Image (cartoon, rainbow, N blue to C red):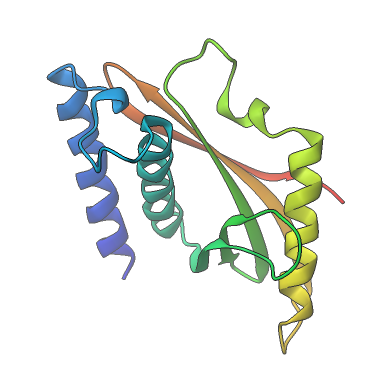
Length: 156
């Protein structure tokens, strides 16, 4: 099964490099006109992170999970071996605002932690260990997307 994730991830990276080669950045992505460009870029980044994590051995069990109460969203939830990981994904199309990982503010971290607690309350079997990861996706005009995962990026 890992070979499938490697194949799909490789194809996505190749596609993004081709798009960059032909000077088609995320701001020129095709999609429904009513969707804002940053949402299209974010969705593309999340798809790339999903396959990157699968290739790295994660078993992704949920994407874009919203808690029943209050705001917030868990971008991805997956098992990294025996550890349940809550993954926040940030995609950027340039370094002007700093690395994508720096865009996760303390307030956003608290929202993710709250959503994770709500999610774990509904689990029948509680995980022995869990952590919060950040997956940063940077659009490079030459190389396409680059993914960097920071494990255990913040604590409760």
